[in-house]
Length: 236
View 1 (tube, rainbow, N blue to C red):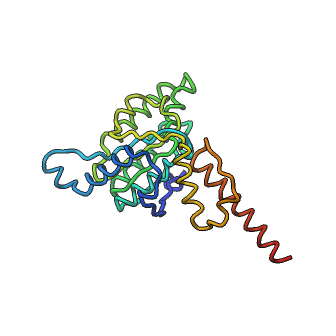
View 2 (view 1 turned 120 degrees about the vertical axis):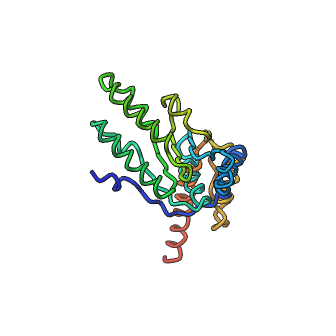
View 3 (view 1 turned 90 degrees about the vertical axis):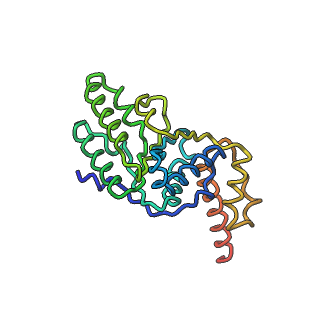
């Protein structure tokens, strides 16, 4: 397996201002961006910059979008690796593959986004006979995180932080939680989604208690259905 076939170089540009975040999380990310802007000056005082971020919480609530927006703000390339596609029955191979990806991101001073980071934790507890092998993999991850260069940024995302190894969690200077959006937050998001086609806004009932991703899919499906119906009427 060529490990780089599993790494996506995502070129989508997203402004941090366009991401729906809790204000506390937004301020922490802004601080990180400022630290990297003055990384040389800070290093002269022996001050480390924050470059390891754990995003945890509900699926579809903005973790991947946040990672892309941070890469855009830092003007760095972003490499996306889904760990569920990488975990191998031969743990030694998995360790080598992960090391290759870390090395590539470090050399290029890029943002490395590890999606489904909990796969390491899940695998560790899934088969008792493999606990020793998985412990070695976790130790490899810890070492890679510890020596990840300051000029690069590591972002890990998980829907299940409770099963991650505590020693791994401690390595992340920032830990941002992603909860299901409130009704007010969803209304603001719906307003944004309807901006290109405001004439459909009143015709689609809004749903609540769902993620941003679910809201987006729901609105786009509804608008497409209404638009197609209108086009069919004009053709008849």
